Image 1: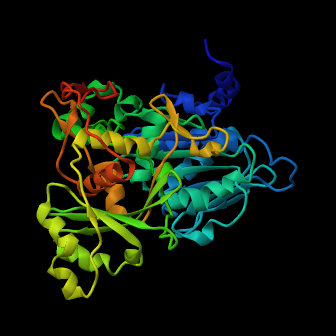
Image 2 (image 1 turned 30 degrees about the vertical axis):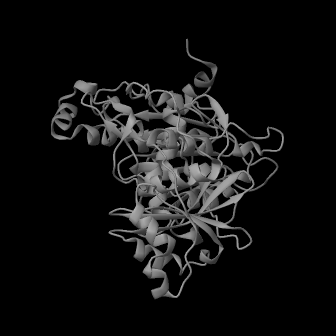
Image 3 (image 1 turned 135 degrees about the horizontal axis):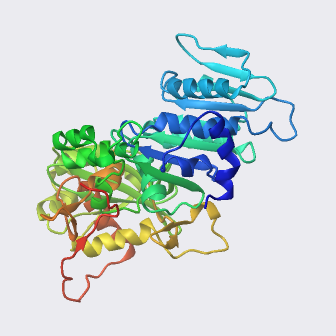
Length: 470
């Protein structure tokens, strides 16, 4: 039996001869204000976006206003949303809607307008002048994998927040997508832990209009035979297999990354990890929260080079002590008072260290990435989110300028892949881990750490959440 929400919009689609595919249909009658479609190449994202948008464009004028409701098709540049623009225009004309204003210049903004009913424009988020400060009833964000937190929170979301019931539909692919979009895919599509969002993935072969045989379609099979499995799953399967490998799956740009500058009134702790890539992170504490305010990343690096860089930073004079890897005794000796200090005319800082086994250290970091300890009454609702069935808050925050640290958290630091194709829950890949090690040492030092006395746990396999073939 079809639900009431679908039956309400079905006559519109019948009128233009559109029969949705199974994965398109839930979007067309979604009651959520924020929606995300992650699709494989050729899955029909542009058509789905257009079919989602046009009935909503016809819905109703702005409450209590004489103005024509405004809708945006947004992309990194003006050209990206033009396919969706054409789909919407053709469908509205087919439905019998007059569109007396229709401007499609070779360069710049495209526009269609039916006075009193709607005004729809293409926008470029890299052209701030085009994102003027006006309320927007709804927007389609095309190739949303390129979206950044700044664009979403500072340029787009404020336009929507000024209109009750305003909607957003984000559509994109995973290949070459940034960390912000992959966070949304993880939170909304994979984990299902964002109640204010609705999202699905649509594999290329689920577009049975273009690929009638589905997964067994000859064209899909050819792609599968000629594409490495991980790339095939991301490019055509629309689910990032790398998510299963990530050590810190709870890390989120939304909750952990922001503008966290050096506070001159608070002490600083410098956490370090020497190696081929030498990493250092400067951290401060505000109440129960830890803020990583800066990073030093030198590759290849030496302790002397990192010290030379550290003493130039504005926070150096507030450093209370340096935390180092307990196994790196030579680096510790240099930090504690090697010849470099006299050569630079600078003063060494106290050095601390303790042995922090990898897995217990990771567990300690997780307690600040998503902490279940918070005051329910005093915590802002927007700061609380659910991860794997448990509500919590971020106690670890990273300044947006710490690119290497964020990259390791969100994409680089991974579990070891087993011969079965699954991932170990105990072993990590010793690569893209320098800042992760430094933070592990620092959090253990800051919050207290004792290695567990229980026997080492038996290795088990972590199964990937998606059942699609690989």
